[in-house]
Image 1 (cartoon, rainbow, N blue to C red):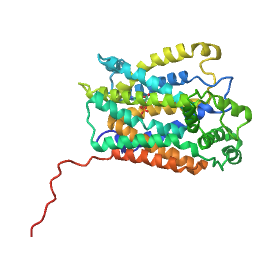
Image 2: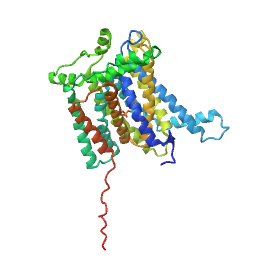
Image 3: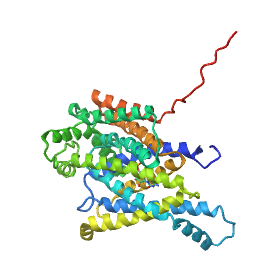
Image 4: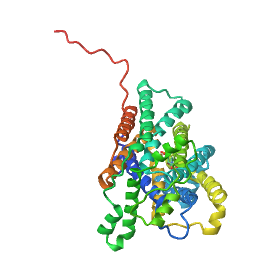
Length: 412
Ligand code: C5P
């Protein structure tokens, strides 16, 4: 395996999984912050549909760049550029390229749902619920790829579901620890020129503190009352009252939960479908060609359904880039890189290994919240989290070989 392509000096499989782990933690925190951050420029928060669209444009550009590099290495030094582009064109629009239109549409939906979810719930609970991807991935692997799962893996899936349920119910007894006011932190430690950076650190701090107070207890309130939760006020200490109201007005945890659960189903289905297309092709097609196809077909639903149909009227009024700042651009860049890394993980490893990487990413975000932001765990939360991580380990760990020969007895 070490003779294949490498990244940061590591074989592609390990490198893509490790990088995805860190990318995922960063994206979850920054995406959530971008949806709740106070003091957005202009009079409007940015349109998620435009970010989903630009994410695809950027992914297309990145994939095309790698594809040009890859194809050019196979050509003689003096080959004209037209030949190079013709080759890429022929690969991208080969007869089976239409197969990517389906996952492209589904990934666009999933990416949109991610904005809805993280705009309405905290990142730690989001990541916990998102672990259910393991369940949906297993389900679609069995149904679509005809794989069979070992008993150990089914047990792991049951434990996972229990763990996620326990965590979902855990926030009723969360206490506000929040000893550390991150806005104070940024005021004291960041020089003026780094004010914006301070603001984002402050925002991430609010996110971590916020989850010690609410979100899923609001959801269980909601479940108990059976009524539509609507927009509940959140408490963002350290932010001005107006900003507090503005941020809180955006949150709707029941909508957030629904969005994650649909995203979970779509993720499993699409990941498995993409893996099937990638690995089942009669003639090998490079992952970069597949990525170009995927981003190309994603542009249509992203543009016509998202930007034009869903937000068209508002965008016409406020402008495509309304509410954009460097935080939003960071989200777009992080998401594009994440998409590319995901494709590399699926290609060089598989969907299940990819999900394992995201579980580790959850531990990183969580430990970060504990160490830096003073997030306090409740017992229920800890038990649920241990079950989720333990089950992930159980699922991803190597299977014991069946039919092992009996131990050799040495007769003296
Ligand atoms: O959560 P999950 O691992 O299913 O996330 C998949 C993400 O990776 C989506 O944002 C999707 O757009 C992206 N992706 C991609 N290119 C691929 C496969 C996935 O951009 N080839």
